[in-house]
Image 1 (cartoon, rainbow, N blue to C red):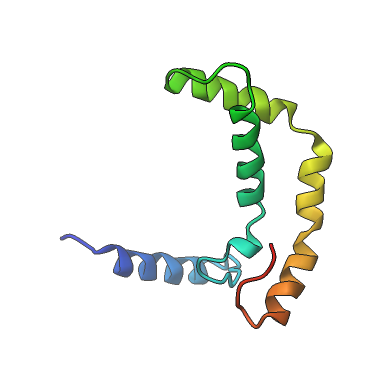
Image 2 (cartoon, rainbow, N blue to C red):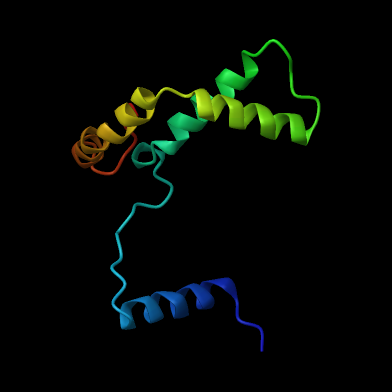
Length: 100
């Protein structure tokens, strides 16, 4: 029996509720509340700014790992710390787009 993905998602949600796994309501397609998007942007910019352009997938993986390892902790901390402001901005915008 094949189960479509929407039904499968419903079954999984029910099972999670049954087992007491807490769920977080998260707006669909809300990059405003997803600081990883900002981090990805910074990571891509750092790779693009390198002297040599990755020539293949292995080069790209290595470049991404090197730039990730070199990412200042302060950058990540600032993004995490921005979550309260992001949530307030989304609430103030009544779920619409914000400056994040």
